[in-house]
Image (cartoon, rainbow, N blue to C red; front, side, top):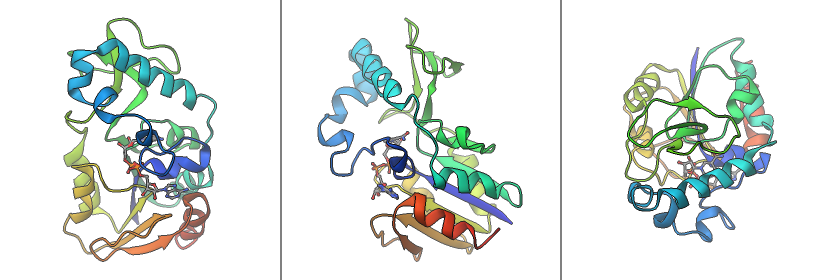
Length: 212
Ligand code: NAD
């Protein structure tokens, strides 16, 4: 069976990485336009790069939770693809192999005019480079490949995303007839999805028992 997961900040919240939009989340105290847009990085690159370097420092030592681990465990018996909006490396740390970072990832850097990523791990971003992440106004990575995986899958599971960010939120409208499920602490009324309401680290391992 092919199972595709689309994950957002909520899956990493139980690991201690704050979401952006929940109460107390990053965007409740920081203006997106100052640090997270194409214009911001073009006009004040040093400030924006420092902001995301500080985020990376906060991610150091964070460990995958039961949700990341349950997804990884499923790989031994099923064809599993992880489409993530997250820039952290918790799916990798959990052992998942087939991962597409639609919004890039923070452990790679790239030149300001290049999309070619260089692994830097948790080091400071080298001078003349920026984090390999997708800021607002920049194109999403691997979108059509992601869509194709969804079209081909038997089960599509959306985990811990507010579905506010375009175009990734449009992936939920992909025409398909597979089983489709949303796991989130909030109920989302979307296109006939089964809603499992609760924390991803509790609900996802229970859900995954269906297929083990
Ligand atoms: P978001 O902050 O907009 O939404 C978070 C969602 O997670 C909400 O729907 C919330 O109800 C849900 N949630 C919170 N705690 C949860 C839990 N314990 N279990 C299940 N669900 C939970 O985040 P988003 O939708 O991913 O989109 C915003 C952007 O934020 C993405 O592009 C992503 O790259 C970025 N982001 C990434 C990280 C990370 O890499 N860990 C962290 C914060 C934001």
